[in-house]
Length: 140
Image 1: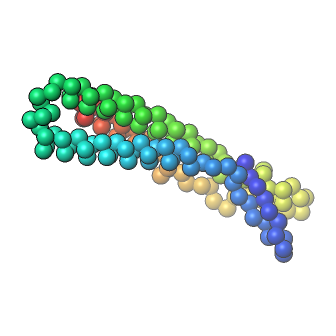
Image 2: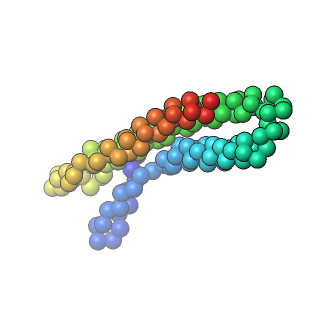
Image 3: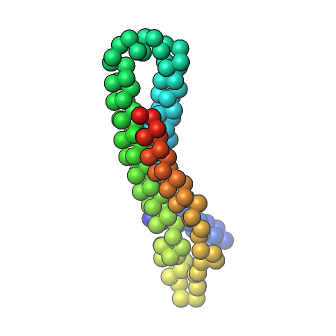
């Protein structure tokens, strides 16, 4: 959805209405917590290995926490992909031109200068999905 502000000298400012950042923030939050947990688990494995092995609950707790992180990582990646899809839809040149009131005037012809290149965004989501699989299996 687009918003338009007309300023003096007939300058049109077009902007997106809405906040598309929450899914990316959710993804980053899960990633940071997963990193911190991995760091803490590594410290426990290296410096407290005798305590970790003497209690049978340690490996089970580690497994459960890792499984929860794998699930949350999958959910956050899906949310991120949906947010990316929403941004790509909102910034599609056809949708932007359609939402601009100035383009409805008969003497004005609006067209896109360049087709947007979003392959880098698609790659980032795709590579994240492969990392989920790798880290999920490698941590076990």
